[in-house]
Image (cartoon, rainbow, N blue to C red; front, top):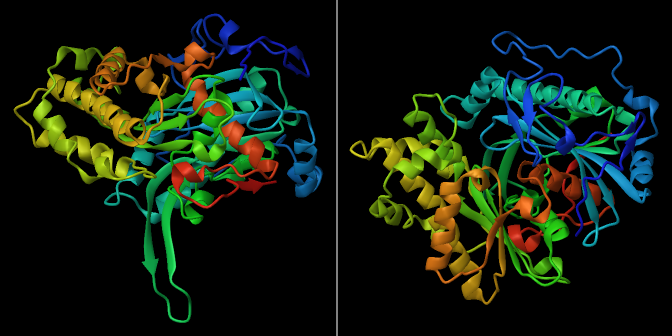
Length: 476
């Protein structure tokens, strides 16, 4: 695959200035763009919604008129008939700290599609929005009325951020072929449960739920929007996660190297992508275990709320790893379960981190953070041994993304644990293969939606266990 960021994309006002070319951030000064393309929030976001008050969506007078365009099927035909499509994709992770947005051009179709990043931005969320979303993660504090309301509010926020993003790069909604938006996962319970109802066959299904109503995004922008990307895979009997293996297969399949694509986000997940021309059914993917959700909470406690995460792994680097705790946690059934499998905050979230701290009051937060960081590394490395290497799959390279890729302490521990299990593959981040670390997941959403609109199967049954399915709900 080839990735370029060369300024050849043209909007109505000529060449687009690329994120990596911008000096000192944009005029709104809500972020700083570094030479490597990474975006760091430095001030308040552009939009602050007074979420302490009742919210009523207000639509701009110049909002695009969706019904003035071609009919739904006609719009899809227009998009998929183009040799190159322009997508605007958004991703909101488990930390709920920001919305990542990417504009990409995609030429061709999987598995030989050419994916180019045009621009990338991070839109920080207001703190009161984060707090209200976090209340929804806990069954003890989540309310049905609030869940319903925040679903539409977050969709409105994504729609407005989309318009601001386009405006900053001199684009209009008509320049974009589609919006890809996975949603903000609130609850993920993919293990099947049987429901018996008189007169019907047994209903056996898992479940997953995300907020950020895609209908709001489509209404505000007038752009063809595809959302709720996980639900079809769960309906097809799959885990619904990890969601990126399809894009890993398209974007990161190498001519000679068998790659493990590791994400250290809120949780950890891996895709093992064999060298070209491996068919999609040879891709193995699953969640490896805990990652930043636990580490972030411990970092916040260690600093009295001054830090939301362990910047550069400095706190963990000051602590000592308590291996007895690591070994005890690694006895949990999840780590022995065969793939396909997925997990989330329901198992490895704030509640887990709080129990870890309360159950070990004699251990300093520095030591707890060092221990939880090692747990992240150990659970991933052992999963490589148990479910990839010992199954006869070669590992020639390991590419790491997510927030954990920016944590030198975690990366050092991960390399050490891989070597301890006899895995000598070089470990690198996405920057080494031409993809900005923060942009990768948003780019992945664009790849999935682009092929889904063309009617291609976009889940990975070998990763999630689901029957073949086309992901996403289309909103015209």
